[in-house]
Image 1 (cartoon, one colour):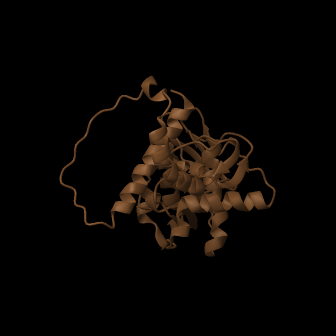
Image 2 (tube, helix red, strand yellow; image 1 turned 90 degrees about the vertical axis):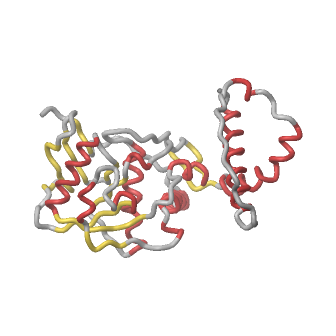
Length: 260
């Protein structure tokens, strides 16, 4: 399928969202729901009629004005994959970076791979690009765990084959999901020490099989739309852009697969 078709579908989806939002203030009531399957193939690559283009134009302008502003620049395409990836490294590091905005000094950060829904493109990154990566209403939060539970958490991350962890975390795992070694800034995890962790609210509830978080305490979950993870990501990219930094990340050996 041509790239133009994908863009057209995005605009149609966005228009549907806008129309739905506008209709929420009316007295309309849903009477029934119908569904059908639409095969998306080359038939949709044909030129769109002038009538349809004219109808979509005002919505397109509104969407473009919201999604097109630049937030930063990347040195390369950043994708998410296990056990470690450039994008998962970046997003976990952004959670660490954001701590200062909330008077927090986390020891490390965890960002679930399942929450990364797209790649970030090389070059100019827009608001729309960030929205595609983080489309959910997840918010940043900070929790504490005892070292013994941090070990359990890292074991659960190993069982998943890897998740996003911040710089300073070094995990050695086996291909079948066993944790061999876990260190933070070169030091082993101390069972009786308390560790402060930056993550997202979805993960802090023990989702994506990271159930050790269910025993966390001293949670700080800042309220407000600005604490949505996508806004935090955009703020980081804007800050780096103002400082003249072209953002980059690579695979650094934060999570290594080793032989048992």
